[in-house]
Image (tube, rainbow, N blue to C red):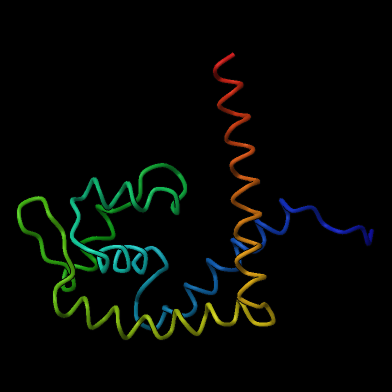
Length: 142
């Protein structure tokens, strides 16, 4: 059975590998990929819990992100004012330190690819996703 594997196989396989790579990269810091996504998202600016959940939802499976479990684990890095969450100085410093590891992990993923190849791969996947989204939308509307 030496037939080439379909795109679905490679997408799922790569997704699983990326999850493992992120978790291994951050394990000694007591962080997971989900923690990183929270910190990295808040690095872009303040957000309410609902805004943060909406920003993270496309990356997390099984419905709503587990923010209620993860946010307290990052409590020393996140300040809350009213309903607004933001990285504090410790959070920004931790993100900076962690970011170097993430950059190395991403470089491993992209090894052997040119910037143009990466851009084209992302474009192709985006088109494929748009095609399926349009078909699903059309099915619901008929």
